[in-house]
Length: 307
Image (cartoon, rainbow, N blue to C red; front, side, top):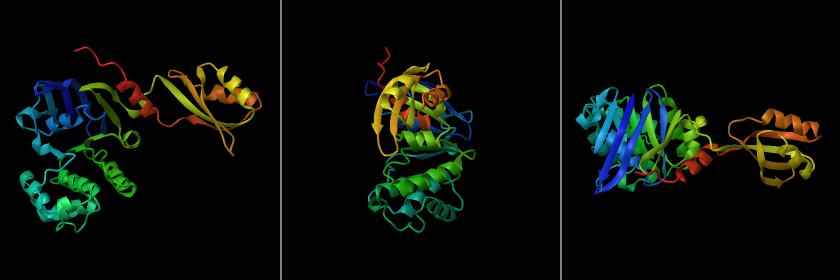
């Protein structure tokens, strides 16, 4: 659906994007990850047709974005919707809808505000809303006209847990219906919500694929047992593929250990068998949380490639 090839952008003599290439499959929800200044917003602006690349190609459903041929396919939510002081929610959405050629404008505005939890808020001034509410107004604007592609810049920024759950549910309903590319700093959200992730760092794509495919250099297991600590440690480190024990804590439930393992093996079954054979009661054994975060940190800590 979205094809980006060898994208390059130079601003004021500074290279912001270099050789950026990735694909977003039709009907998928894809996360665009990266630290501040990585080039995520610049890339989304190019895809939306709001700025031109210095070189490279971008197509949406086979249409060339650089020639303006794909604008009617895209709903774009910038991180900060561009509204003048005093503009009301209904006025802003009506302006966006007229630009997009929406026919039943009043009906669509009511439906979209209801879908993002802002029903009846048309008279409110946009600049008087909370940050989370402004984000939701931007999302309603992006959906006007029922575009097949949504480009969302930090759509979960500034939302409280209840609002976050609402936006998560809304985006989940888009899966298979629209193609969604969203930028985010929230790695757990990306892992839980998105089919694919594209990791951008220093203006380059350093990794892409399914969240479960982006693994750190080693995997980590969390083990909760009842038994002698020294015996448990010795048993764990004798299992093939186990590098060592990184963390140990004890509470009323038992002994909790974070076990570092090689990335290319899954030692859970032999590890459980070894502990049971050693007379240790195994209460829990599973993957530790935060593998995507660890992979992210390792990738962005890598040296910058030579240009």
